[in-house]
Image (tube, rainbow, N blue to C red):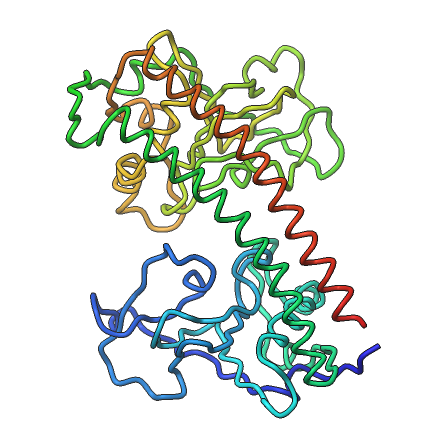
Length: 384
């Protein structure tokens, strides 16, 4: 087994600068925030000030987000998007090249994330770790030639994972393109479809139950706001359970094909929308709205409309003046304007979506296998 050393003994950690909103600009040098580390679609704030060089980041720099959500933004990332200014909550990891190879160190410290999270403080979602505690985390340190061999093997496994992820992204891009091809831009309405409101298309709109859910006890899984993704998909992780009286099940259970709408969240996330597709019915929490359509629409079209660029902008504009948690209630949801294309066209779109989702589930399984391969290799190689 390789000897281990404290993380801080083979690198120096430079924390970012606490930029004030008054220092932001529309152009200039991008300020590298946590959200920019793992999502290139996230926008930048910029700065035109002459910032000290110790806060600069450049291509190839290893960064560590010490505040974030485990599984997404928490951990080590390479920066490859040009000159930037380092924001607070991120360390630039300046390594001792005589002792450690940079790519190896990224894998080695990320392999310790479970231990790091145990050392971190914060709530269920957001975690923070202090500089001292991170520096004290032990990482294996074999000889440099062995580090390079391990990093090369893990790079190959990570390349497989990225390709699987790209397949999922392409599926999402394809469905967005199909939506625009079939229905046109909702703003310009090139097909001259009738315009109505969501109220015209629904037969049943209900809030979920306020019953308290339990981690393990309860007859039915309960869907909460975290089970809907911003991209418009269902995520069945982190389920809780609840008992629903038989007389109330028609009110609080989601059935295959129901649309779910997240009515309360931060103003950036309120309005998450997805179609529930599962053979097993599940209960829905009070922060969700269950929507069933009438003969004029199907939920696949309705969900895609709300998840389109136009739909997202509409939902954001409804919450733009709100500070903190935002809310869009059932009446406001039903008042949203929407194009009403022929039901036959909506049904054709739904068939395409269902076919792509079937493929997407295979892509997702392949990505999960690739992630498991990478994790397994990391544990094996970094413990040898």
